[in-house]
Length: 420
Length: 156
Image (cartoon, each protein chain N blue to C red):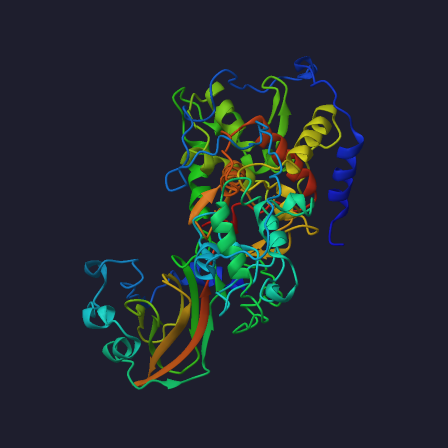
């Protein structure tokens, strides 16, 4: 059991609570001076458009984090006798990265074994001698939920990722897998591949390009906006004033009836004060958000988990972590908890667990050479499982950010981070 | 260690090191100080030719070259490479990627007494040996290490 205590608490906690009406906005400011926030306009550029270079497909017939679409379990298909498929075609389909990263993302298979396979699922290199019937294999691929309700494998047939004929070819290919995989070295074998340790110095500008954005944020902080005022006009000595601020973010904002993180706070507070327009996902917003969190570096994540509004938000967020979405029919927990796909390899990439996934955003992604804030990270997870992403700053992402921060409570902030 | 390196970089500001980083895309040939663009070496399409044309032909294996590269690189477009040469009198360090279309990635020259240390990012087309070559006292030395360029799981 690798699962940590706070995670356990959250899961248990989610089971115990019943639905309670949302907190009323009147709880807002109790005699305290209310923070100035612009509340009416969109915090992101409208209409929302997916980032350039991302997949353009819309998966509107499948669930998202806001919209549940029923996903009926595919009816088992009766198959008499042996399947006559083409194993060559089946191999090509199994290795095809155009439809969900290929079988190799999760399974060892193929002769010779292709480079850096994953181990979320079983090693299938000896599958042919397991004694499964063709009908069993076919239906397991078509929709595993018929046979194994706990499987995290996508329903490849029922969700129309592969046709009946294509799955028959894959069955034919699996029937050729009759000897243990041979790996060139320990790195190739996902069971012996060393767990990656993040040891890069993320605050070294030679290592982390996002440090330049931090410097830019520092400049923006002191630069006068359209109303001739800068952040520094009201908040002198940022190092002292904001030493702990970002560690307690995100927070529920009653006037917006949702949880907002540093990013949306920057957008709305700047509009209400300096008059600057720092839209979510703009370079300026990311720069300032990095700077605000940089000021809290070394402080343990300390989000409020006790107030009524936050308990409810974490309850909603925990439900979202368990919600299956997209054509791939995956929930956060399917890839990021150890009892499922977490702490395993998805092809050459390590799937981390929830603990360790906060406190470094916005982060420099070496595999993308871009800075991503937590919203963009959530969006990418959505698109990766073939679910339409939500807009940055969505209430659901706010709940998820708070829940993830609660699961990472105590971890010291170190921003900008660096990750693959 | 990292703190030390950071301090070192700050204090020296890389002074004394003539960087010929054309192949790594950092500088255009016109921007390089006195060094000349070795077109023949940078456009050679196999390792042996590239090493010969960059004046590292007949290099002997040396354990005095310390290479720090990731075992698995997360992005072939940006692979960190850190090299220290412990060979006395080192005058240049070059990086070759055996399986790149043009293997020579970068060639750094060091003026007198400059610390023969480099940290840079290179591009790799696929999993390959990263071969370092060093010139010291008129002789060539070499050592290589494999870097696997990873394949993402989530469809890209």
